[in-house]
Length: 214
Length: 264
Image 1 (cartoon, rainbow over the protein chains, first blue to last red):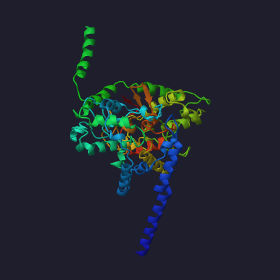
Image 2 (cartoon, one colour):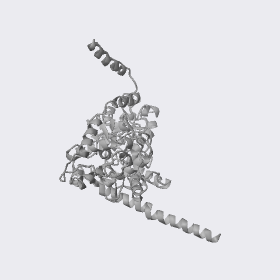
Image 3 (tube, each protein chain N blue to C red):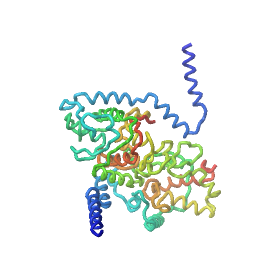
Image 4 (cartoon, rainbow over the protein chains, first blue to last red):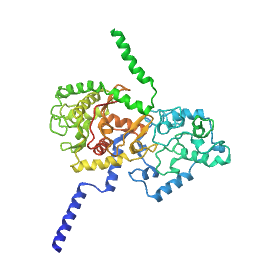
């Protein structure tokens, strides 16, 4: 009986050893995957290989499982603390300019000429429904139709609207401040859009005169 | 009489289109209409001729090329790739395997072809060959082998590449292809971490693209994905592209291949 058990244990160990021999450990695979990425890409135009270097947020969100709750909270806290609020407390621009930016999917590919914010669009319709008029919209993000109206924004200068106005700025500046592994780019934090461009997008979402809120 | 018939024939589809329909209904209808007369057939015919033609510095055909099922066996090869090849000791997708065959059998310089832009030089030959070879497995189910340890290891590397977020937009493959039923603008996005079903995603490339009139191979599809992911430029047939092929193909095991398909 004891002997059978010992043999079983031995067979079990042998199977495990064989398994290990054929498949590297998860940590070793992580290293091999990194080496593979570094060896597989090259610079092209503005898209250089240094784009493969991850920051702490990207690293924490690169698995089929979300990061531990404590780490997610830490990422969100740090992102929130680093949000740059708009100069002079001016949050809103022109919704017409915002619509143009929302339509544009340009920016930061190797076929784009410049990394300047002026060369970039907001890419908003790629993932969101926004105005009712544009039927070609993506669904990766939630619908933003009636964004301000649904949140009761009748006058953006009203102190009652301050919380939603600030949240909206923060979400566009650094989406990870509110969801550590949000799919949305960090438009302000990553230098994709400047303050004036963000103000125009703010107006598109929040201005009661914007087609979004009709 | 004949003229009247022609006019009527033209009016019927126009009348059908005049009824406003929501875009999500019209788009699948558009794809269905496209399926009659797929110009990929022209590429298939060219690929078939290239397979037997004596070419390259060695003036040899590709008939001795082993795509995984023995020298010269084309039928069923596509749905079992990428796979491990003992002679190169590597997991290879169709295109990296074709590079090997073109170098070893025909004397072409594989590195030079890998550096050639899509749609030029010998890349044009590979497009046609990929169309013909994939067509020989049309209607068959994806059945990528995972028996070799290297095939399983490369799957794990492909999985890591799939979820790797980086670049100015923080995108990974999973940002767009991690959930079912999503779109960019009107474009449906296949979920690639699971089996997205027959004839979509990995089971539908290479494909003829109506918008550009080009035959896009899986390598070209991945290349443009990485461009839109705001990543740097992936080497043609580089390890990351092959690993992603293994990941997508194994996840879609059993899906029926429609390659070479037709796309907008």
